[in-house]
Image 1 (spheres, rainbow, N blue to C red):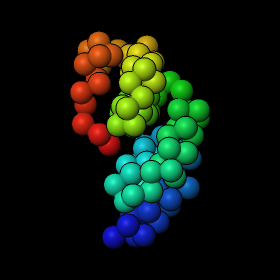
Image 2: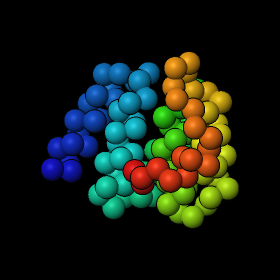
Image 3: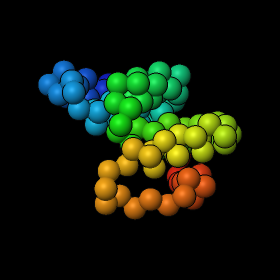
Image 4: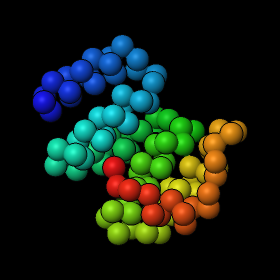
Length: 102
């Protein structure tokens, strides 16, 4: 139920405005429901508001890769590697080009 899921995510965002996870969930929901343009705007918001959150860069890299923007995807994956917290396995950015789409 897309409308119900989107409402739940929006409520979660209102409760936790400093948490990037609800935005990440909304991006996935939008893409999986054919609303890619809205998803792209949310991804830009994600990497702008939380530039040190590596999962946002991975997600944007995946979306760019699916759009066949391989250079942009590689740059995003490299940014993800640069901001990844200690303990996160860090493959080279080329390996992330083969990750599944969002």
